[in-house]
Length: 432
Image 1 (spheres, rainbow, N blue to C red):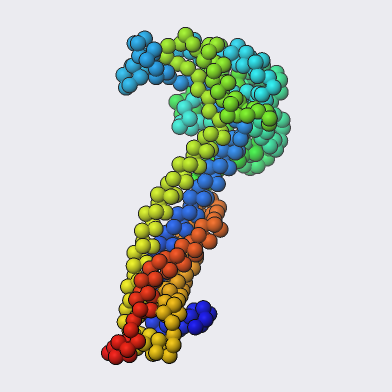
Image 2: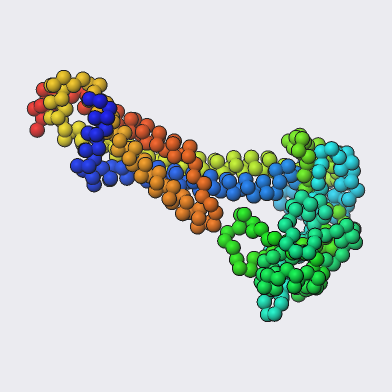
């Protein structure tokens, strides 16, 4: 019996017992659908995280002050195990002189030194009001390097100029979302006017609007509000004047390295530069540096492990489905014992009988797997769409799912097929 004939016989058997066939496939369908849905959601989340991190810059290095956890710090009376921890003082901060020394030392490796300062608490919301309407905002100060690197699209007016940065002038750029809400989208109506930003604690700051930038929603935010909290951009020194931190250092900054710089080794150089030259005598704090590449690798590894764990759990139903296939094949062999005896009496070999029943098992699993793939892709895309993202279906996971379905059919179909092949033709013909 040819392979195609075996497939046709298997399909006719499934058609004759449609309900039993569907119930047999149910475990395979659920298992494959679960795995595909998990992979679809996982791949989509991975792409979202990577695109977000790439948006922050693949060549970025984050540098920040962190607490030491060495024996030296414990001997100095600082307890980092849950007790008292010394707060950062002005002497612990990274100063402008330190940053100047860093850029002088590694001028060929550093392209941008990005500094930012937020006015007020991140979780609190300030507002700008006009004609009875409010727009939610957050005042954020940026230095020239940060603005040049992010290169926000200016829809009207201008960006900041040298005197704005140096003198910390009370100028700002507002988003097109704010203009849409308060000025009916007329950029010219807001440029050159003064706006008042009122914080949640009642304090207010006045700024002269010099430009309008295009608002880009955060790619990891869920949904889009008609009144999103947008940034009122101001020069860094302006924000530091408001916060009364103009003469203080920084807890955090970001570096953008040159294209030819190896970030893996440069991270260590930056960390050692600060800790050896400036923080060797600081018993409580040191400088830590981490690259976006390493953060992306860590996040991708974590997401992959979660996907694998969930897929293994979902795959348990495949084993249950395979046992169901084995069970129904044993029943089928019992029902067709006389047919097997007749075929063997007419000269059918053990291998041809075995191949027939293995083929039937594989057909059941493959059809169940295909149904499971469509169901899993649909569920996965629905879940991702509900989160507000675009779904990413992995072709490799679909191919693996089909191959796995065939493997289950062969594995769980072999025992019943082998049992059928070993039937004695005389006993089979006598079977009632």
